Length: 141
Image (cartoon, rainbow, N blue to C red; front, side, top):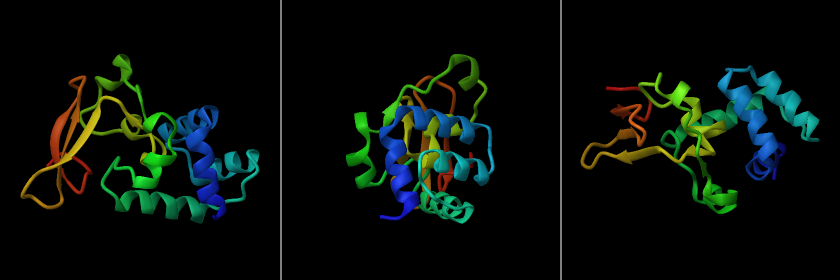
């Protein structure tokens, strides 16, 4: 297992690390901040590793977990990430909805494929913040 995979596995099982990654991700931090955080936890990764991991996460539908992610995630890979002061400002999926590399979905976020329409997904917040269809999981049609 390479260092990036090991770091991601650590993040899935370490709530304090996931909070730090969430904070960096939500602020739009550059890869060098993630590289430094990984080093603090004893992992040697590069900005290119971060880019490749983000790209690989982007090849799945937004927020979709892979089978091994579901098996490895403590508590099933979701959490209540809803903040009534922040989420009401959203009109589409945000970082808060999916977390670092789409690994930890908000309990209130649901993505479903639209039957008969390949590459189209429906994105819904159960708290009423958004509901839309999008191509490849990105923004409203």
